[in-house]
Length: 331
Image 1 (spheres, rainbow, N blue to C red):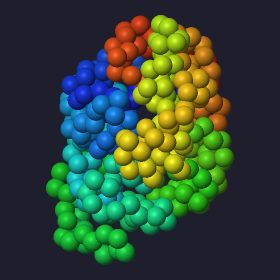
Image 2 (cartoon, helix red, strand yellow; image 1 turned 90 degrees about the horizontal axis):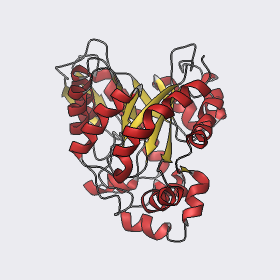
Image 3 (tube, helix red, strand yellow; image 1 turned 90 degrees about the vertical axis):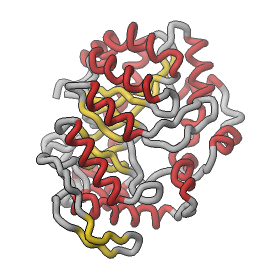
Image 4 (spheres, rainbow, N blue to C red; image 1 turned 120 degrees about the vertical axis):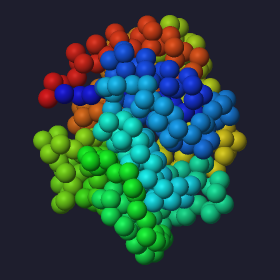
């Protein structure tokens, strides 16, 4: 049965608003909630970037049922993996076992701020592999010493470790990253509905099978519901035109000004070609269906724009979830 999530988009809303949206999304019937973890928005017009872990701690106390997840945290530059292990363990305790740690290799936009530069992609993947090993070791509750190529850990001990541990989901984009991280992860994360990723994951020795093996394939898709289609297209263009660049571009741009320059020729119609915009819930369902058709078990929706967030939750969320669940495969 496909599960549907709500995205706490830290780039477009302030911290108090995000906690409020989280509680309303739970009441609307979403199965899980994911939070972005950025130091900066992609575009200055988005206007926000609160600290995701503080927000999630508050959300863990304000909600009761929904599962929570970072989508995704980079545990290599802005955060040392030993610190990520500590805060993930703490959040899992606060969430009573509802938290999954989503990890990825990061974006220059957020990671360059600590002044350590932006490594080449091969190096970033090596760093992520070491980071996962450190986090796993620390979540055993044992004292950890680690000497790797990129990280060192000296007599580290996470004192408050949840009994159920912390599941780890890792963002992958192709066969090489699947082969590398599938055996290290509990779940798959991807932002494109590629059936090949699921097939490659399930064919990788040591990777937990998606579906029957209990592993989840967790996707994410932006939508822009609004009562008026033109308003939705204008808002999606203003807030989300950076999305057109794709991971290969977005990972390396360093500032919101860079994203603005890179997308200056993207039109509202260009954005609407890639993002369902307007009041038609069936059109939104059709766009989301690409994920379950590709074999994804979970899909998190991103409702674009803080100005429409409340109205989306009040008017559209419940009927949209009903339509999604009616259309999605039951197993």
